[in-house]
Image 1: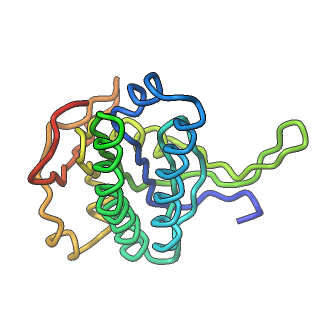
Image 2 (image 1 turned 120 degrees about the vertical axis):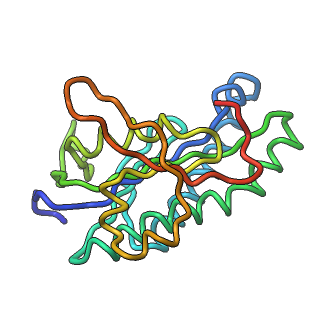
Length: 196
């Protein structure tokens, strides 16, 4: 995607919960080591599901999934979120044992049109994504409780009949100012931790 373009994409935001507390308590080198473990794992799960990491901000990662078929790339985005959550669990348990603070991840997913392309700042080029759907995905992430994956109705529609296998529960709609409320659904885990 070197040429700037506007296209439909599934947007995934994933973040570690409670990492700020860990970063305040640990030595800087250890903080970077732990966040790199998370980012490496999440990036690997995104790539394994044909997605692309677009940005990293503190303890969160933004990825996009595109292609000719919305059903395929929407399913890939959800699988990447589920894979990341599953694979992070033993890592979070190890962190709790070693550092005394529970760590789990949360994810938010949305489907919409975004602008993709390369931007340059002081001689450094970076692939970026812009659009309302990116902002909405981030807001959906903030609605996810620890260990939860929250999905917009738009992404669920993108899945087509495969949506029946998600076992997602309707949540109170996301209110964003003057626009109509955005229906969202949560995939919770049985042993969900309720700190946020």
